[in-house]
Image 1 (cartoon, one colour):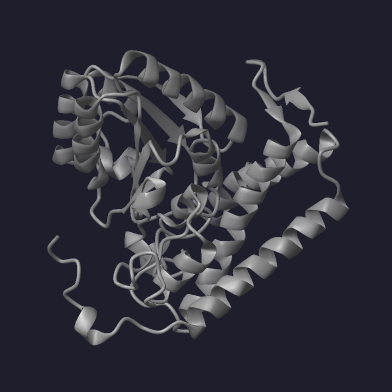
Image 2 (tube, rainbow, N blue to C red; image 1 turned 90 degrees about the horizontal axis):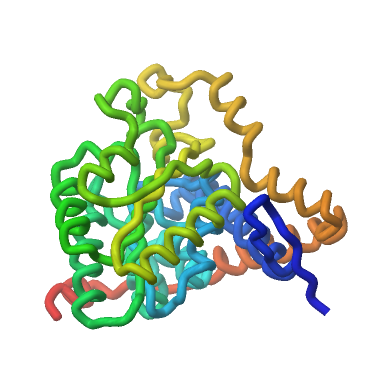
Length: 336
């Protein structure tokens, strides 16, 4: 018989099976991202690549609480984790990264433009701040159609300096649209620290200027993310208005595949800083918690690792054996 446990002071009761699934999701994201790094350097992946290592709690604490399909998700070009969390198969994601016809965007989107609308995932966006104006439209459509669905939009700290973001937030606040903002504040807009780019670094205050309630969240703690998200979703579904969550987090790798933090032009953060943040690794913290509670033990962890390794290897094999899109399909889906 399934048991539930209280995981924090807010009495967030979660079934042990669900906790294991959350751990499995976070581990899948981490191992998948590690594998695509290798495949890029084998010249199997073209274009650009942005990994999510260190930010897994921002997805695992949010997406499993959504109603999919029904709710909607938009995000930035750092989008592999979001697709996997929505239920897009690792095969379809890996095939898309390798530009194969079996990819979730038919091999035409690549790393930055994963999409799976049947699961509510409206895709990654290669423009800084680009998902927010789209969320405005989705939020308006939800309100026009009726019901209490929610549009979740992820974007970064650098995007909070974009005009289109504030124009959209103003309209979302004005018309009271059901949008959940997830600000992934990983401390750097590419290689530029928040302290060097933002006159007012209190992003919750900026959201409040548009009539949008919000709060700051420790994005390195799965339970804090989950708890804040639960409150935000209830607020949106009950009142039909937006909510803003600024999630402080850190990416353990560079901004993108060309940023390994070793070349002279990429040394914008110290090795000591990275190592200090790694001590807060959300995956390892969660694993230690589950071991402490007797939900996981070394044998179970090893088994999950093995299963995920097989799943990732299967995705790679599937992608490498899939055909490339035929040239005559180049203009398909340009117009509906």
